[in-house]
Length: 127
Image (tube, rainbow, N blue to C red; front, side, top):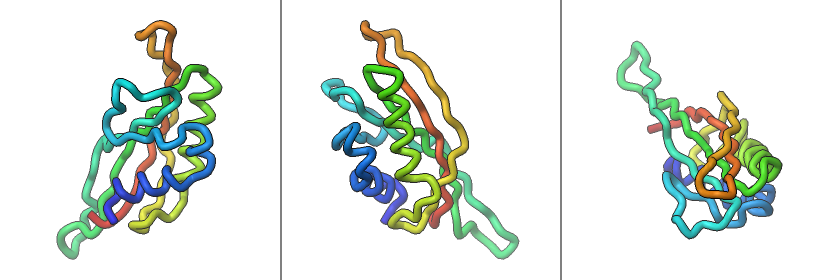
């Protein structure tokens, strides 16, 4: 199972995530018709973990999860559910998530504003 498949499976199976966002978890980009709240996630970077013995057997991959909602509280609640679903949880590919950053922003377009709360999670797994 790839890291992307493992993330999607974990988010789809987590009761906290589905209670808030249902099945609205999108890799890279949400459809324009997506109802709030939803989460979009994308790989930010992948760095091989090299050793002196040869090619990397593991990669460190940073993934950004952007949680969009109609209220500040709802965006935070979704972010916290994402964190609970992925932080230090063994995924199907045996990766474990480490939270590295949390941010809050407001998207002023469209009107009314959409609230956004992000969490960045690093995963170490086989390429």
